[in-house]
Amino acid sequence: MKAVWRAPAGGGARGPAGGAILECRRAAAAALSASLPSVPSAPRFSAAGMSVVEHVREMASAGLHSNVRLLSGLLLTMSGNNPELFSPSQKYQLLVYHADSLFHDKEYRNAVSKYTMALQQKKALSKTSKVRPSTGNAASTPQSQCLPSEIEVKYKMAECYTMLKQDKNAIAILDGIPSRQRTPKINMMLANLYKKAGQERSSVTSYKEVLRQCPLALDAILGLLSLSVKGAEVASMTINVIQSIPNLDWLSVWIKAYAFVHTGDNTRAINTICSLEKKSLLRDNVDLLGSLADLYFRAGDNKNSILKFEQAQMLDPYLIKGMDVYGYLLAREGRLEDVENLGCRLFNISDQHAEPWVVSGCHSFYSKRYSRALYLGAKAIQLNSNSVQALLLKGAALRNMGRVQEAIIHFREAIRLAPCRLDCYEGLIECYLASNSIREAMVMANNVYKTLGANAQTLTLLATVCLEDPVTQEKAKTLLDKALTQRPDYIKAVVKKAELLSREQKYEDGIALLRNALANQSDCVLHRILGDFLVAVNEYQEAMDQYSIALRYSRDS
Image 1 (cartoon, rainbow, N blue to C red):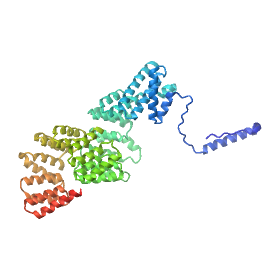
Image 2 (image 1 turned 45 degrees about the horizontal axis):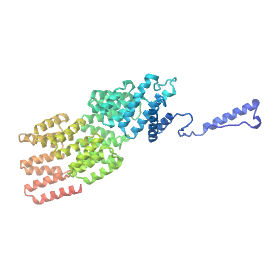
Image 3 (image 1 turned 90 degrees about the vertical axis):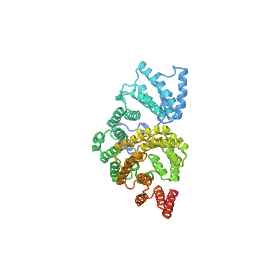
Image 4 (image 1 turned 60 degrees about the horizontal axis):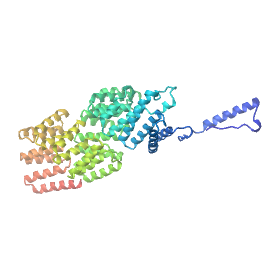
């Protein structure tokens, strides 16, 4: 606030005394101004002295995209009819602002067209007038200082191309930006595009450049770990910032945890994340809970996985990430009403993510409506081509519809995106078995066993294939025994061992196996199989009891 002081009528104070009075008044005014709180003023648009292009720029800065689109469209038409109406730099600005408004309206093809015209205009402008965007030089003209950044225009074009699923064009436009002029967001987009295209070396280089500029870019860290860069190497790129900032000591443990995640060491990953989650400062972090839920799922511990997903969504009712896996687990347990409710809730949050479509697809799949599940899976992939759960859903629907070769393509893509997820390999092996390609199934199961290690899940998967060949029945038995030694409660191993005992008509052994498995858990499938075994030994009354329990669990879920 500026205080205005007027001299007294009649000329006011004159002479030395009057000068002293004026000085005192000025000092008092300054003190009063300093004591008043500053009030932020709203942006002012003064029509005086502003060109029409400056008005467009001010509206663009204010986020008035629809207004920018209308006015800039009219002005560009005027420029087309009278090329002398606007200077080359003004036309460049109009094209960029018009393209930005089209981008905001999600008209990506039209936006690319206008951005391309803008870059052509800028190229011609550079050749003729030598005008450049401001670099901080005081001699730069006001006109040059107002020009939109050519690099930002190229980034926006790349965004348009990614939205149009034209990744090659996006890479080409960003590759054209000199390395020294690439901002962190340009390097991040390039890294993701390179990774998707299978250009791992270039992707690693770009991720590292992001970390060099922004050492706390955690998604870039995850990108490097997913490309098999050692956790120690990644941690070394953040050590300086960890040591210089208080309460950041957890980051090195976080990197270690996700290094285990990306090497498929689920047990150590779970233990490390649990140690992080137990720390008071990171307790109840939704991202850590979601990671734990996903890891338990990968380890075949569906009970703990569901528990962690439930904790996460209680903390964040608008959580979408990971809910596709949660819905799949609920559907597998037969809790179709819960799956339907989850799908409706997710659609109310956002229908522009793959997760709601996958959850609804799981409901359809487990309701044996495979055509609808196929449609919903395809819609999810359209929204996010990297959605592993969507690929698995569509692959399973295709397999159950008898379109095995198409299903194989989807399972292979899922494996490419998530090489440490066993369920991707399970889907592919089921396709091979469905088409009687036992040899291919055996090769794949052995590769999984060697790659992911000898745990209860990989042992059971290999045993499942061995059960299909009479020659390898004994090997299947040995593998299942090893799996059950590691995890006596692993339901898939129990079911396969029961299947083997049924073939051998060893019903008493099967009954003992199933009773032991049901001692600490309840599962409708195990109760039903136990009922079948009891019928085989003429224990009809107890068999009826087991069937009733199985039906009750099925009805409750």
